[in-house]
Length: 147
Image 1 (tube, rainbow, N blue to C red):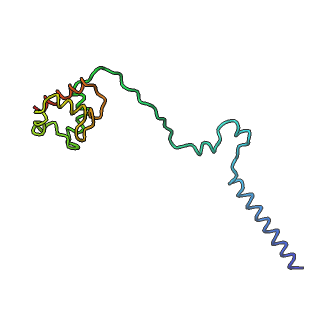
Image 2 (cartoon, helix red, strand yellow; image 1 turned 45 degrees about the vertical axis):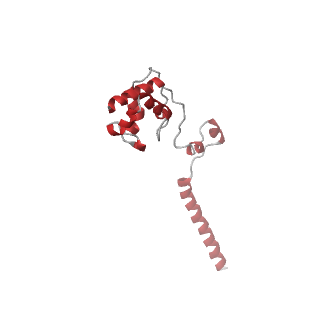
């Protein structure tokens, strides 16, 4: 019987220690949760946690107001200069008069045709949307630079 009493006392002591530990640990780990009524009012904590890091919206860029045709120097510097200043993709450099000599010998109309239709790695109109008058202005500008 003594063994029964000691087993019971050990059991009650273990239960007592467990209750004390629960009483200490539970307040430290208990979080306040919103009731269903509070969750229905507005923001849900889970919605806030799963939002994307960044939001963006694609929109079509508005074209700048047309200010009339651009001059040859402006078009050359914004479109043509990327290749003709560095010699990229075999483009003759603007300051290499020897490379431009055979091209100048073909005449202005042939140069305009080359720019309009594209030549070698150069796409038609240099890949830009420019008018025929603007192409003529660019060709005249380049011819003046390489002579």
